[in-house]
Image 1: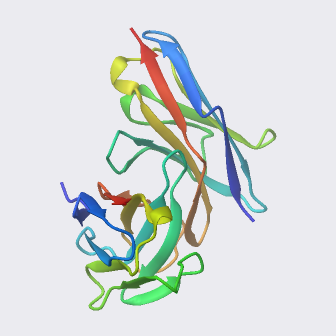
Image 2 (image 1 turned 120 degrees about the horizontal axis):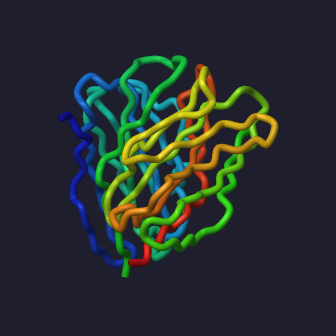
Length: 117
Length: 113
């Protein structure tokens, strides 16, 4: 069964360091999402890609966060520099269609647990 | 604008008892509604969804939910809890022709032996 892959699963870093997370969506899924989930809260959308283009990054802290999906397949989310408040689970999800449609189920990866010391 | 409220951040039931997790939504247009489950240190798994049609929807693992437009609710139920149901449950809302999901803050379900 196809799955969304993420790595690493766990990352511990010190504040002011740079970190990067990788996501490989289900093959053929045009839409890719990065979410941040703070402990005890629901996922919050950081950025949404349609193929290689960003369609929504309104909640992405652009002074320190960046995301790319260069070939419209896998994606990288970077934080530089990391702050204590960035400690959270970072989830990647993908959807099967290439345009907004009547219904798009999102398939989630296992997440990357980031701890900033 | 769309939003989701999940009443009760923690719910505890005995094994074999009814599970009821509450979700109320706010949407200016007909909503699409979802329930996801998350086990510790894992991603989210879709339990069930409502888009159109029958308002009582059945999902995996014996869960079901009923869309009640008049009450703007989409509560999740299971007749008999199992120990393996212990997890965190998230309600989410979207709408037609719109890929964005809005998630509730989650409800942690504890199942006592």
